[in-house]
Length: 596
Image (cartoon, rainbow, N blue to C red; front, side, top):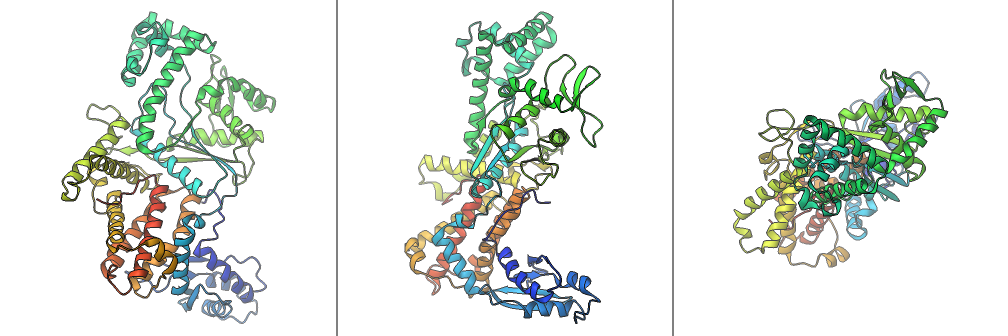
């Protein structure tokens, strides 16, 4: 089910649907609101008999059978649909097959003109339009004083790609929210431990705290084993929450050191985020709970204050037995802030699938309060996007040999180092400056990690394997990068001014592999629309991989570019391929390389 309907005028499928809508009205004038069922054709046994297909005939005949329409079966309905088609420069020919399937072959001239306009106008003209102005993507969200580990990888990568897709769709305001875990009882033990090491918070910096993970573990060991320390930790929480300056300053220092560590990861991944942690909503919780209480949603249950929602046996615990707040309390308050202060029309939360019920209950509570529409498809709306686990070779959660979670910064560094080692084995890079080698290794390594995640349906688990993701064959980012670099090499070898060719040259799609490439290129808008409306980046990855396969194994193999009579047209096809590939890379957060 699509999460959102997009306006996508550049979609070939939608343009064809408009043509067939005219025909369907003429074919069955007494059947109102017949939706054209147009879809791209899929090759069977390597053979594709048409580009698109209209599949209305069978369904229509079932509806009109016995109504004296004169149609004797679905094939007759299909033939009438073809006969009633208006003139269209898009369509070269149509034919009826089997039980009324209308096979559609696109005009080569029209396809070529579409590609020529792409090169003149730019790919942004192909972007769809959203029905909302303000969208928030809540992703990454690590906890303060803990290292980012491989568990944060999927949320960060998937969230960034969805944010990039929304930005391409010209959303008026996109908020990339990092909902940091920067508040809670754990800060008592962290602050108490910090004061034992550095009584003056001003002396605390990144070097002083050192390894965040080790600092957190040391404070936890003391909390669990030293009663006197545990008491001081509990008192520290109270003094922090009461706003005592010394404790507030210590908390800020810990947060600053953590954020600096997080930024190292975000910088490597080229991810932009706006941090707004749990602490920002702490003062708002009582106000939001009071509003919910006045609406009759909050009730006493076993000493806690809870909210029950439809279809779930367990309640949302809004206030714990001891009077404290929790994760749910914060999310109740932060969502109120997003809807009423930031005026967000579409809230997208990206976490692992294990948190689905938490968000489902949160949204149901808001619908029960009347703060979200009863219809989940109306705006403002909230959507939880779940994802599966990152697994190791043993099929279990990906960890180090000592059973520690893998630090994300170490994982990314290894990807880069492996890529650099592979690069240095190539004779072609021996004369490269060190800076180019470093940047290329980063682009290939980090891109490989991202693509290995994004090419999978986000709901499934996937196995993390460096050897597979850094392979230059198969469905990997490295294979895509090699193809991109190959096209760049063709353009350089031609020695032609591509801007001049774009202005004065024309594309001709006479060879079957030229046509296959051109068709796939102009299908980018509808594939992007499918990917975004379902919030499935793997759909875009599959399109990019197929584009690379068509270029490499068909066009590049069978259509000489440089020095051929068709050089101008084929250079323009190469440039169109680069344009679409680079947009796909950009949406996936991958930096393309121009030579390898």
